[in-house]
Image (tube, rainbow, N blue to C red; front, top):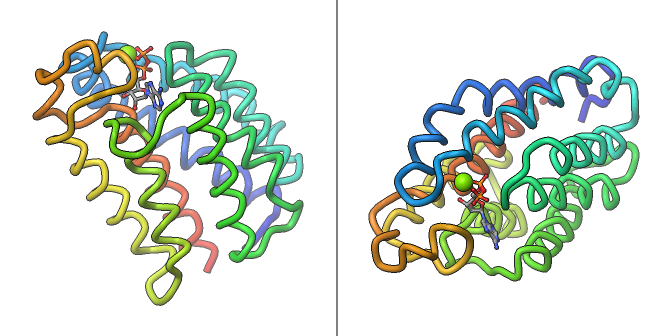
Length: 204
Ligand code: ADP
Ligand code: MG
């Protein structure tokens, strides 16, 4: 993995740009089963990340991830701010300064466990975990086609939230009426996975 300031800057911008470009789509998803703020929440958080991208990129990769986590906690708000904040803060805490591909699985494992603890949630409840958990499981599986195949795994996992009934977060207030819509947090997680995978592939 190329781990220069320029490469770290590209990673930061790849994630931020992806969420900012798709903010309207996330808003529409959250309008269907939530309060319609997920797109703006993520946009606000990642615009703040973009504003500090040059400074962050000079830091080590774990520090970059922790820095993103802190900014997301402060700027995103809603349920997703502390949860995405926890994800990035834990990745930053767990990854070594110069990680190999093999270091990614234990780091994501710890980060997903931290999100579960923070959200008191599990996969199957129509949340971001319904993307993060299958992506982690697929990484653990190993074999051919990594990391590229993770983008398809993440997108299929986001689509698989459509028939689910929400039992966590605001969408759970709708009960059965949450069925038939993609979870906004699952979609934002798939967008993040897609951006990271594209970055990893460009490194190869
Ligand atoms: P809010 O629900 O406060 O308006 P957002 O709209 O920004 O916050 O984020 C909603 C997303 O957060 C949901 O689509 C879901 O994926 C995720 N989410 C909400 N509660 C939880 C939870 N307890 N565990 C995991 N993810 C959650
Ligand atoms: Mg919302």
